[in-house]
Image (tube, rainbow, N blue to C red):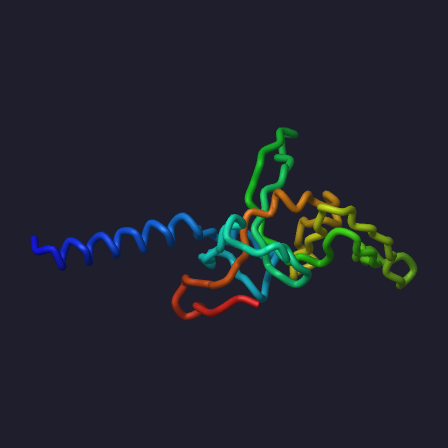
Length: 158
């Protein structure tokens, strides 16, 4: 090999390894973010380590780890994809979706410093902070930026 080819291969290898260390791919496994994200969408996620201090911010779609309970009562850690509804210091009202005498019950939520409140876009089926409360922002592992698969749905995520 010539020197130019070796330099080209070294630069290419370095570029791909940097991209791999700053990003990851996540597969959507539920309808909780429909119609924004659908089951089996593959997402490109920027890892938390390369994001600025304003992460996570209200409105962003993020990946985080959460403890989930299985049908047999056991628990496991699972990656989830949801939208940030509120961050530390925010206070707001959220509906629980249950109607009592035709009126949706509202609950006041105060998000503690260092926490985030996440909701799925498809509130009817989403298991989110309404069920398990605020999550520590340190559990947020990345920001969803692109749908990369299937190709017909490839696009930037907002």
